[in-house]
Length: 132
Image 1 (tube, one colour):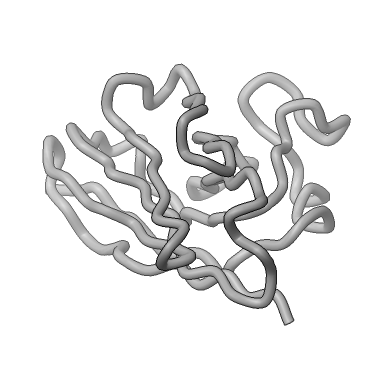
Image 2 (image 1 turned 180 degrees about the horizontal axis):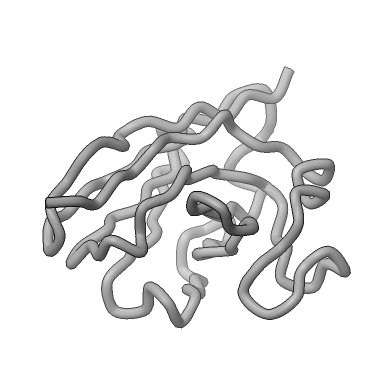
């Protein structure tokens, strides 16, 4: 069955860096667009970034532009998110998912409702906390 397992989260000081990983199995990873979506405490789900199947095509949300970089290694079936210059507002549970919510009717502005978790495949999330 399809599995997405995120790792690499933790506690980091403002201005610090973290690298998240998402190990995929149970499907042909190299054929899929992949996304990172996050949920901060008390807020809706927020799309962060997408990467195309080959890794050449990427897009990031304005809120993380210039600080976050998505990449993938199709030989290892793994998705990555390099996060630099972290801010307190980056504190969230980070999910990798095959679902791109940007055109979903369940999203308005930056945020989406939990209904988007019913589409595509999702990992269990990894917690990132940015605090001094």
